[in-house]
Length: 116
Image (cartoon, rainbow, N blue to C red; front, side):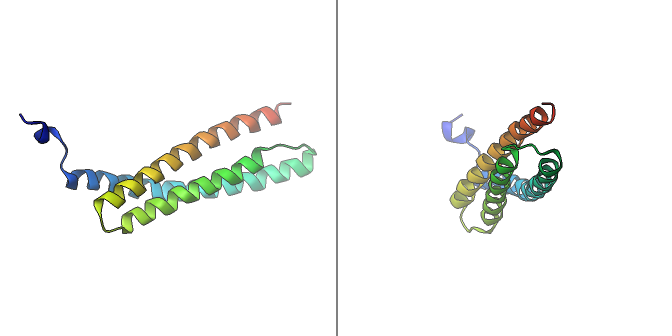
């Protein structure tokens, strides 16, 4: 078997990237809404409890990362070439994972701030 035979055809890679983008786009958009809702709840807790936390600022950054993931996955579905699709999918994938990681850190911060 030749080395070139073991590679995945370009059409399959593009299909995988497109499926990933179709999955990231709605999830990231929904997570942006979750971040905005959490910011509103945190602001209420801060006003009522007279405490301060950096969590709402981090959630605003997180919502922005989810927006970047949403937009790049959306535009990846609109590009004409498989190479651009792959690049845009990579950006969407990386920003989505970064945003999910940041959301986990913020959850830990919120838990710590509320238990003080």
